Image (cartoon, rainbow, N blue to C red; front, side, top):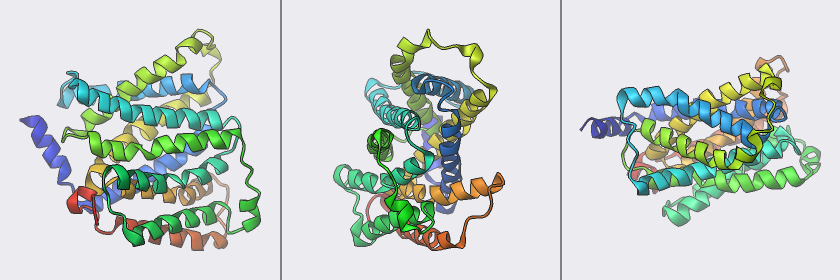
Length: 311
């Protein structure tokens, strides 16, 4: 059957290509922290996410119609997609809501906990054997990311104030950490386009329940062009593209290795700021970049064996 052939072809992509795509996904996700902070006060977070998921779902629908079928998956599979989307929707809502009370720098610090939490989930539920070296790499990656964020300044780290927004985002991180392990569990060799579409579609339904009471009070005519532009960027790139790439990579290299790419977010944020004329980062951050890179390489060792599980 064509669907089976598509799935098999997907599973045979070379690993160097998967890792390249994950670097691209990490760069896009890193940019979403900055974009999210810029637009979060333009709309209620639930409404903003509803529009984001609607645009993302509609953008992917033509590709699904062209190459696959729009038939509803079996109920058990649909429930799996809905569980994945519950985690991602919960994370994004926590992210946008928390950015009303905290800063992008605080949230990026807290997000460095996600690979470690995801590794624990994978070890418990997927029996992924991390081993001493990968556990050490997870800790080193977190340390390196913190070094980059705070530019090697201990006083900056100690000055981090934990507030309501930080705690809310931490709760979202526990949801996000379950995302890639769930993808590994739910995937049944279907095309990544099919899986991504139904995760987005069920996510839209979760958000419709969440945002419905607030839709009548939205002054759509007052929403600025900047907010609309940010939503479209987040929908097409930070949602459709990164969801697709993350689903694809999780099947190849496993949940922990995929999440390890989030250690690159702080360095990528600095690169993005430099591209927008905010100057080069200080040399003091380079040790952190090196530690993060080495930690990620250790975590990727043996990727692809047993479909990314084990070692």
